[in-house]
Structures are given as structure tokens and as C-alpha cells.
Length: 253
Image (cartoon, rainbow, N blue to C red; front, side, top):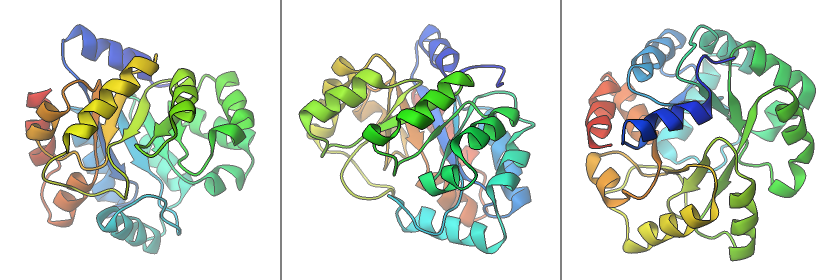
């Protein structure tokens, strides 16, 4: 198991009187070695690290992350390779983001056992509806893993309440309808949405989709944490260190 749990990571952020930072990295991108190096860099500032396992059919990924996944797949990146590459990182906790097809291909019990053996703390499965998650959720709980939930602004009010009430680890709050990608600013409605969900959720609320600069942290200051992905992938694509993006964000938390 990870030396620090997801819950402990957020507790430590609260104790330090700051919000949590959750970088997203694509496994195998830009190369396997490049991913390993970025993982180590992210670990110096992250509270939790989200690792995407590339899949042939993108879910809510924008063009930047789609391209990264396609490149990683072309280079032969697999779930097995991903688990091998993250296994040596004991802290911060690692959360995988992947398709339900990748979970079910070898069976839920086998999947849970494999990620636990690699020291992974949990997973986000965007194409697994809450109503169909019972079996995997039970398997995760039996093995001390966390199945994290997502919410979108288009989620119906009652469904939003149900998902928020059952959230564990942290609740991934999609900032706006659409796909991932950087943006300049967020409308006032986004902050109202964050505040509304915080009233419903017992788990910390983290905002993703579009987070890339300190101004976003200040604008959505009521969130418990921030997920940054496309901005990091862009930096890697340009041969820059992801710390160029993470350090300013970290200082704004």
C-alpha cells in the first residue's frame, strides 16, 4: 500500500492550511523514461498523482491528452507496464484513470489485486456509472482501495446528491461541460457549482478540466484541491519540465 493514503494526503494539506495539488500524467508519455522522470518531479509537489492508462477510445479527453494517449499506445504502453513503472513510488498516493474495459478484461478481482500489489491507492473509471459500480466498489473496499467518483455541471440535482454522498477519497469535479484542455478563466457559475457540491460531499472536492495557472486556484478558492493535466502534457510535448507548471500552482495553494 502507499505510505500515505488519499485521505491522509488531504488531511496533511488541510493541516498545512492549503489546498491539495493533483497532477495528471499519461503513462508512457512522452516516452517510458520520460514518464518515470515526470512522475518523480510531480512527487516533489503533489498530494496525489493521477496516472492515465492510455486507451484506444478517449472518454472526456481533449486534443492534448488524446494525442498523448495515442503516442503512448503507439509505443506499446500497457496497464502492466504502468503498474510496473509506478510501483516504486511510495508517496504521494497514486490513482489510476482508465476505462472500465481495462478493468474488466482480466476481471475486477484480478484488477484490484494487481493495482494493490503495485501500491496504487485507487482508480477513477469515468465510463462506469454509479448504478453499475457496486461490484467493483465492493472489491476495492475488500482490498483497501478507493473507487473515486466524478461529477459534472450537467449532473441532475438528485443524482448529484447521491454521488456526492457516496464519494470516497476525493470527489473529482469536472469544471465545465466538454472535454479536458486549458482555458483562460472560469465563469462565476463554476464557483457556485463548487460551493454547492461542497455542501453535499463528505469527501474533499477537487476541480479538474482547465486548471493551469495560479489565477484559476484563486478564482475557485473554495475547492479542496486542483487537478492539472493538459498544461503538464503540453509542457512535456515542448520538452519542458512539468515543474514549470506545478511550482506556480503550488505556491498559489
